[in-house]
Image (cartoon, rainbow, N blue to C red; front, side):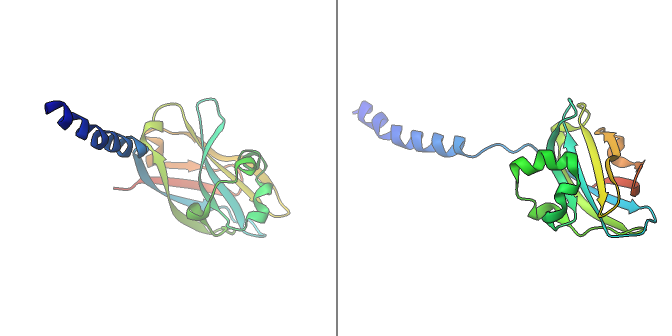
Length: 165
C-alpha cells in the first residue's frame, strides 16, 4: 500500500525536476547609462560599437551599436570579424548614428560577474569615407571605471558611464 503511493509520486517528481532544470540560469546584470560625446568632425554620422572583451582581449559580447543600418557594419572591421560570423539579433541594442559634435545616451547591460575580473569594454568608431578607430575608447571593466569619464582617441571625444539603480 505504501509502495503504491510512492510510485504515484514518481511521475510528479520527474515532471517537477524537468520543469525546474529546464529554465536556464541567467547571470545578474546591472544597467549603466552611457553617454558618448563626439568630436567636432564633418561628414556622415558615426557607427559606434560597444563590446565586451574577455580576459584574453577577444570579443565576448556586443553591448550596444550606434547605427542601425546593417549594410555598413562591415566598416567596423575587427568587430565585423566577430559579429559577421554569428549574426546575432541586435534589434534591442541599436540606436541611430551620431554626427560630429553630438552626444547620445544609451543604457547598456553588463553581467555583474564580469566586473573587476579582467574584462575590457571597447568602443569602436567608423565614419563613411573616413577612418575606423578599433579602440577609440577602451578601458578595463572595473567598479571605478564604470562610474567615470574616459577620453577617446578618434571620433569620440569622451564617454561617461554611470550605474543605474
